Amino acid sequence: VQLQASGGGLVQAGGSLRLSCKVSKSTVTISSIPLKGWYRQAPGKQPELVATVSRGGTTHYADSVKGRFTISVDNAETVSLQMNGLKPDDTGRYYCAFGNSWGRGTLVTVSS
Image (cartoon, rainbow, N blue to C red; front, side):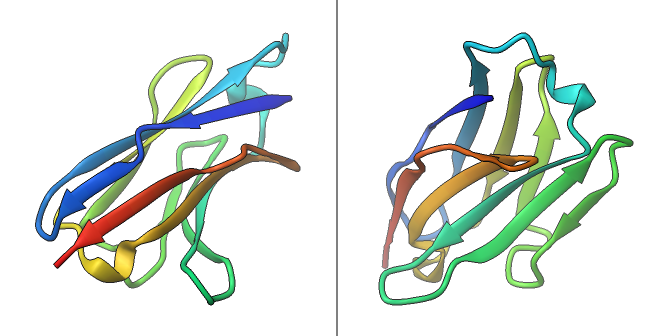
């Protein structure tokens, strides 16, 4: 499964971004994948889980993003991460992962 993440960019604190992760060049539909998620890595820090959604639709969020971020399955090929109320601490490269497949990531920069 090949994944393509998009939607990153530069935004001021308090702003919003919507990241999308699309399956490409595959006959697999994401509904068949048990767990889909978004992770991020800030400069100089370890990667961390941001949010996941299971095949049954159960979502899980890191405490640091609860109430601000929403993960959703948009269609048979795309999972999105809506990020509101962004903070400078949210800066990092965001990666989507569907099962054991990872995308290259998209950079999010939040200025203060």
